[in-house]
Image (tube, rainbow, N blue to C red; front, side, top):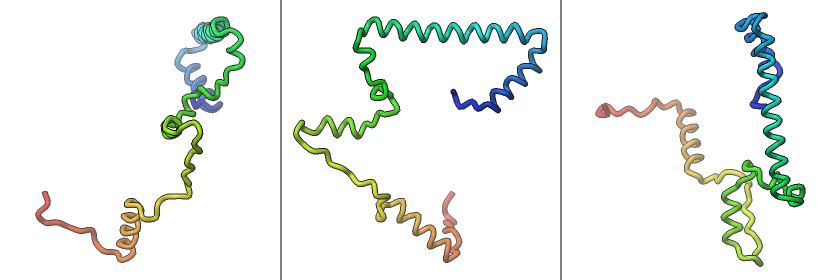
Length: 126
């Protein structure tokens, strides 16, 4: 949850003990527990309201399909441009283009490093 590991949570707890002190810590711990209960109740209320408004379709809904992390604009555009009967064009992801500009520049830099040439110097540059 939020990238917090057990060690980080423990460290936050130890810092809280030192900052708040033993007399105020139980009060703030109770407030945190109350906040967590309220957030959980709000989430459950929203889920129940969605279930009431959507009816039996709510249980049949594929939530993973609606996950924004699954969003791929290339796939959406490809599917929109294809007719219903056409087969999608599969592009091979074999690797980077060996003739790409980036790889050509990288090879040139590696060759220059092997020759141990000094970097070009322009005396007129400011």
